[in-house]
Image 1: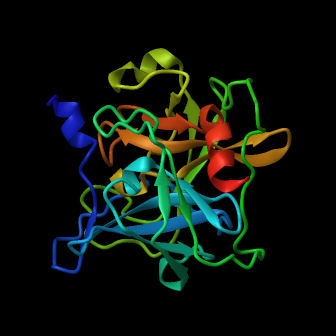
Image 2: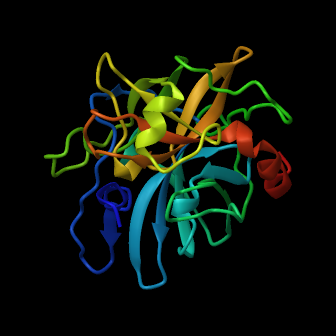
Image 3: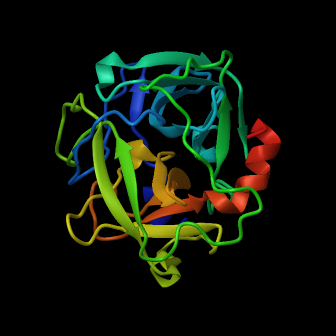
Length: 255
């Protein structure tokens, strides 16, 4: 297996069996206000080991995330409602759907949906975000368009204690040539990078949403799929393009 493939599967362990906490998340970001659609997901294997990543609320029952967080796992604890980690409210689900053509080797079709057992109460602190329009062919997000990314966790690779506040950074969509470092195919994936402040995701943020403006409405247009250099910014982050899977999402969720 190539070296970059090894980097893509290094996760942050939260284990009932006392595995070391190696969580890393947004670097060179800023403390963020609460993003009502943001979800923090602890996903657990049947042997008790857990990992965590990100997701985005798209309805009162559904969380959009990466297939990586779903494939091979049986329980998802979804935290919502605050920009303070210790104040999140959690809902536990054992129902999730990865895209049927998801390939864990090259991460093709890396998208999935967690279905909650109860409907969320929609408030100013917990609310779904818009999806790209059904049957859209515009290619959201556009090259050079700026998107927002948020997540909880360490702000650098050397940190040993997770910050308790949601962090935010901005990235711009790069051209498809920059994505050739990953085993992905445009237009189903796109890449984005921050060349000004160096903001980037780390492995604990896989599954987080890339949020852009579509017709004046905040919209999830990408799902964080791959990072070449965790907790660094020399390479762009690869995202699954939500627009390419809009019909599948509608089939699974009705949204």
